[in-house]
Image (cartoon, rainbow, N blue to C red; front, side, top):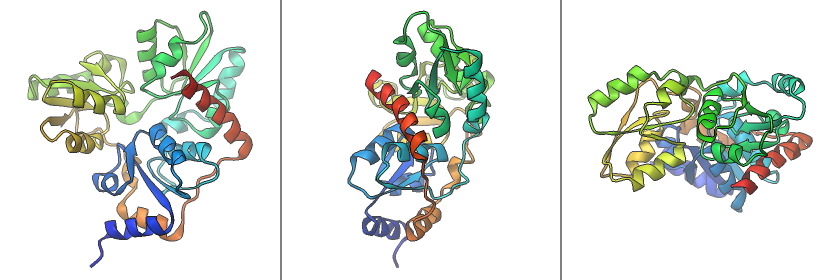
Length: 301
């Protein structure tokens, strides 16, 4: 009997499709993917392949980013209801209103944002390169940081650059408290604590290392520590364990689950390939404006 995984891989070959899975996806979805990674890394990999179709297993803004970078490819998301609360907190109208209050300000936008908001931006950033992006902006510039205030607060601390922070956040990361980190340390003495900068400042302050998901993978691989407390969405633990079989990884909290990330299932991936649904597209004027902000980020790296 053909397994669902085999059926997915067979259909992907027939459709000339590449399957991308974010690090927070369900383990079985990560395992069936051609590439796993963070949203921008995945979009770049897809753009570099000769695939005609991209199946993006993540949340909607990630598929939009793939569509921005790969306009000639068909981008599909298995569940179009897989949204992002942080994106919803920053509608384009609110970002335009903030810009109007600060004419001439440089708008730095986290890639966890809609295509429309990226199009209103001067430059994009990831959690991995946000500090570098901000540090290299012209001295004395007024900087608007959209939409994650927790990542923005961390960047301010690292760079010493004052910024006007948009009041958005990731609810999953923001719910993690310092008490939970202390409890995890007590339960796992000696474990190194890796915390994502989307967490609240008072929680981030307790980290041994503040890292993006790609940074966590590198840190776990290169540091001599053999036990880690992982303060990010729990889907990350699957890849960390898979790539580091001799090391131990503990979730900082079992509540660090993004329900939107978990909407994508193997069945939905199969249906997406069978029916070529659901197509994600970005209007060309928006795509070009958003692409400029993304390209500026890439050139700054």
